[in-house]
Image (cartoon, rainbow, N blue to C red; front, side, top):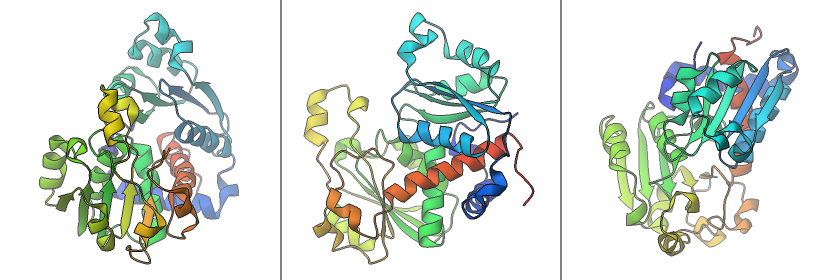
Length: 307
């Protein structure tokens, strides 16, 4: 039995394998329509979610499986004081695989150690979000045709952005990837990510607070929202929430083939007027997430049909 808690739990070869499976699902959905027949996915979400929870559930249904769901920690036994460990043990009695989101860093790992079925981390606090990164990798691969030789701009909340931390970890595996980190001083990438991933892997990297300066260099722009729920101080949130807003005017300075990504939800950091730009890929990215979650479920349940 195997769980996926961090993107680094998957080797570079396994990432390529999941991308290949996702592409095959896109091309041949009927082949996978009964791959998980008789299997149940439990979605345990202690934090609000739309895309991640629904894409996991849609993925399992499209594989022919079924879903049991907890969408609010307040309505579960956690509100009575039940531990994450006990919850995982109990849910293992009812499901074949668990996708879990929790506001506390490390909660998914605790669940995985206690569960008797595979656990997929669907986001734990500000730590990491491996299946969002799988969606990101498929998006970049399909839209740019490669994962090597890219300049990627990461913009907004780089301090608390678990999607950013996971993506940096993933991209450290590929050749000639240059990062441009765009954020206000208060929301810069944590030192542990910068030193343990970027410096340790010898990645090319520059930090700036100027989005307009960065834009012409980028092959990929990864926007993030400033996350109110990660702030202890409302005043700091209000001061920083509008630090970067991507507009059609700013897009005029970007490469014609640059792509814009966002893990969503957005607030106002990307103008709705950008949605019509062919370089806007964030809604495709959400769709690609479903296919990658299908591929991961198949892998962890060893249910992949013959190719």
